[in-house]
Image 1 (cartoon, helix red, strand yellow):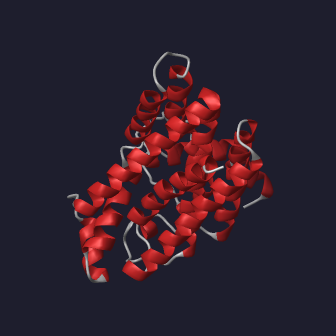
Image 2 (tube, helix red, strand yellow):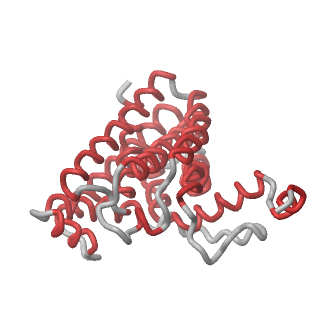
Length: 272
């Protein structure tokens, strides 16, 4: 192919990136984005080998409804606890409880089975058990309390930016974990759409960094650093547990990583 033909057939980088983000938003949420151009594929799943790099950018769109809830309602007389609860509900609804489902499946499988095969079987079961129920209650309750604490300490905009930084940490950690660990079995989410390449993890970090930096308008650099460290350390601990329990990762483990990483960021930030 000639250079002129290649230039003609290839989209501008910004156009391709926008289409990439749109595909990821549709994949990870219930937001019905329209087709954004000829390079935006509506009927095919993203190829995560490279496109995983834009998961933190897609997280901006996915987190926007919760951020708007925090910003708009913080100007009202509603208590911080009520606003935080509504923001957490909005986040779960927008994502279709995708990552929450992963967390509950991991809790049921990892602690309800005695062999790797049985744990994977439990994780594929659509029913939720005692371990999954407890994990969901604790996770949602902790997120609710932490977002309420952010609101009380930093106001609406500070809490919204802190929420975005927390979600970004969890999503970058998910990309890193996806690339680092082997799949627990072939054919699941962690392999069906491709495994992120090293360059995708690098760019995911580059895209995530500015989203953490903007939180410095309200949070100290020490809070952001500690929050990021706590979030990533918890994801690393999940990785070690996944290797021990099922010898790798699944899509459920990736969803759990996003939840745990974002909670870890909030815990780290609010501990200072």
